[in-house]
Length: 249
Ligand code: SF4
Image 1 (cartoon, rainbow, N blue to C red):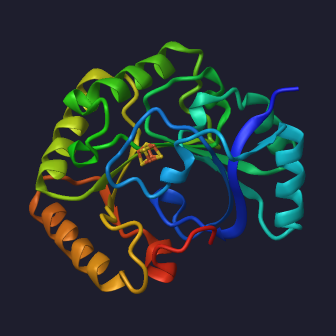
Image 2 (image 1 turned 120 degrees about the vertical axis):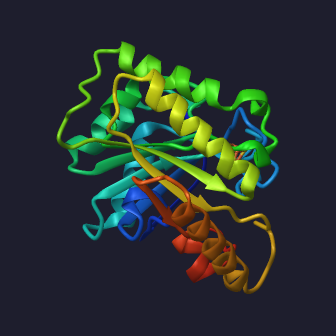
């Protein structure tokens, strides 16, 4: 039976970012990532050596125990969960009446993403220094075109597709403007939700980081207000405002 490297399963907690922000969810964090972002806040997922190897059934069992009828939403995150064949896991969770979200940077496409309820694609801007930064727009556009090429029912009522970008500086912001223009120009499907979130550039700093993050949030809100962007939501990372850099909450 297939086993997956699982860094952690925790919750119920709240989703801190994107369109589900503030909603209850249980996170399943898979180890393994094809990127190496400079400010990654989950670097412990990069090496696939120390984590538990769990079957889909073992993951579902832990989710059932944690949720204990207090939560009906699960977020598959990483690392990059699209490294793995998680289609059967998604189907079992949905059969158990969970709504399933996935978070990925949009570098690797797998058809099972078409079954997910909340698809959050989070391309990494230049400040990430990620391997594909030369044109980080290309992989996500290729990803979206693959989705359009599948028998993807775009207008399913129980699905939303979000593009969410963490912004750390003005270069990232300008890159986002270009990304949005190119995706709008190139793709048939135009109904994406667009979210910006404030980057946390010190993900290992202990103690209070809230003041710094709120200052950065104010800066980002100011940039969006002055720009011609009309359909973009700007959010802080809610979990960092409550818990700082604490893990597993
Ligand atoms: S894509 Fe996400 S998990 Fe991977 S290195 Fe970047 S921030 Fe970390």
